[in-house]
Structures are given as C-alpha cells and as structure tokens.
Length: 411
Image 1 (spheres, helix red, strand yellow):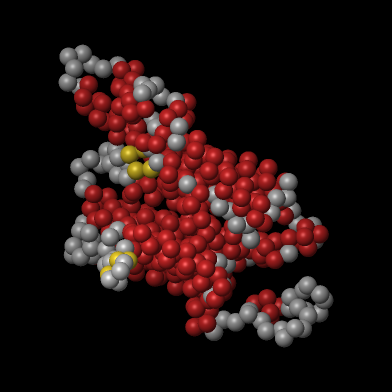
Image 2: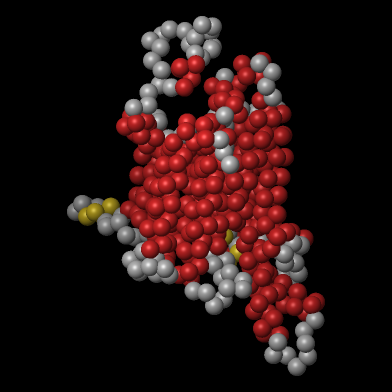
C-alpha cells in the first residue's frame, strides 16, 4: 500500500484512475456483450488498442519527457512483445486444428506427427516445415510470456549499454535508435527470419481454448485488461517520477554534466530507464496485437516510433496525463480520418480526401504545437488548474547558482 502522502501530493493520479474506471464501466455497459448494444465490437477493439497505445506513450514520456532521451525505436519493443505473444497464440491455435484433423486418422497421431503438422501449417507459406530455434518456447504460455519480457528487455539492455557507455546523446542517439528499428524491421521481412517474413503472424484474435466465446466478449475482456494495465502503469510511473528518482532524471534532462559531477551514475539511470520503458512497451504490445489480430514487420517501421513521439509532443511531454491524452486523441482521430468515416470536402477544382491528407494534417499539427504550444494539451490543463512555473524575473535560481529554493521546486 502506498503512503497517504503520495496520494495527497498527487491527486491527479486519483483523478486519472477514477476517470479511467468510469470510462471502462461506460464502455462495458454500452458493449454488445454486457450491456445495451450501443457500440460495435470493432469499436470496442479500437478503444482497447488505444488504451495499449496510451500505455506505450507513458513509457515514451518517461524516457523523453522526464529524462530527455528522444528514442525513435520504442515501437520496435512494442512490436517485439506482440511477436512473442503472437507466437504462442498461433502455435496453440494451430495445435488445436491439427489435433482435430489427425483425430480422424485410423491410428492415433504421435507427438512428432502433431509437431510436424503444426510446423507445416505455420511455415508452409514461406516454404518450410520446420520450427526455427526462436520458436523453442512457443508451446508454453508461461515461458513465451517470459520471452515477451526478456527479448525486448535484453535488446534494450545491450543497445542501451553500448550507447550510454559511449555517452551518445541528443540527435545522435535518436538516429541510432531509429537505425536499430530499421535494421530489425528489414531482418524480419526476410522469410528465413523465423517469423514468416512479410506474412507475419495472423489469426491472433482466436484465443486458444476459447473457441466457443464470441468476439464480442473477447473484445471487452481485452479492453478490461488494457484498462487495468494502463491504470497500473500510470500509478507505477507517477510514483517513480514523484520521488527522488524522478528528481534525478529531471536533472539529467536539464543538465547532465552537473548531475555527473555530483556523483550520480548518469549512464546507470539512463540504462535502467531505457530498459524499463522497453519492457513496458513490450507488455503493451502483448495486449495490443491479439486485439489487432495480425502483426507483420511493417509494425516495426521507424515511422511508427516517430508517430509515438508526435503523440507525446501533442499531449505535452513531461506530463504523464498529457502523454495519455495525446495518444488517445491522435489515435482515435487517425482511425476516424483513415477509416473513411471523415466526409470528403469537394472544392470544385479538387476534392479533399482525408485518407490522403491525414498525415499532412498530423505533421502540421505537430509543427504548430512545437512552435506555439510546446507544452501541448498538458499546458492547457496547467492553465485551468492554476499551475504556473516560477517567475524569477531574471534573478538567480536560489541562494547559490544552479540551486532551487524549496518553494520554487514545489511549484
């Protein structure tokens, strides 16, 4: 149980959890499975996926908004988590189909025949009938879920250690993370990568052992799981950034050299944050792709991580609720514009089709926010709540250069 002082000093956490709980209850009561069928099953899935994107946006805000590390590769960890979960889903579902088919044979099928049948079904599309080494744990749900944490976490740990020990910072680190994402994406496009190349993993919406449960119930169950993950993630990260650890990472963002001179292990803090946020992104991917139903290497494209940075910037980086607002707003707006639901605008000489112009609109919004509202939507909440940054009118930060007085630190 967290100290009362923490909740007393962070009422925004209680407000966020209350809003999330009310939102979850409202969607449940309007779903086709447990209430008046006011919203479709497909829209419930869209909302569930949006909550997962909000969770990965929280991770991005922690690493960028609070620590100042602009990573353009966190959607790679998100997709890796989805791949690890998708491997078990595809294996277990295919096993059910193969066992049912072989049950009609006059002789009982052996374990080897079942395994061979599963491999043929999964990898026949890429001209193979053998399981790659990476599928060694796909038959076990606990082991594969452990892989969903270990694989992205280990990749982030190794990459972060190599980058931070070399003191790569700023735009150079952003380019390196983007290069890592591109290299991983290009590798997975190959058929011999072990993950079916461009075909990816499909049929992930069919949960093994729940074949009799309709998609209306499955969608709301995943929606609940996504809401729970987002709520727990918000509480955990808000606790992290509110204490001494949060003060240190903000200091690293503002003046890395001074923090290093004070004796803090800057590289250690960065490596921990990079690995932690990669794991959070992977867990979000574990919940996202069973709702999406399919994952392929295009999900690892560098543009996806750029979108993630845009969401956080529009919502207001350095504010956890801003990251959630930005991700939810842009994601739902993108679904509306690119799904063909936004009406076209005839201009006589030209018809504005929003499917073609959505990315232009998003890019323009990002530029406008950067120039005119650098605090994003979060800045609007600050204005309404009366929160203001200290106005020192050019005076020193405190009694000594570089120090903050207690009242200013609390502002």
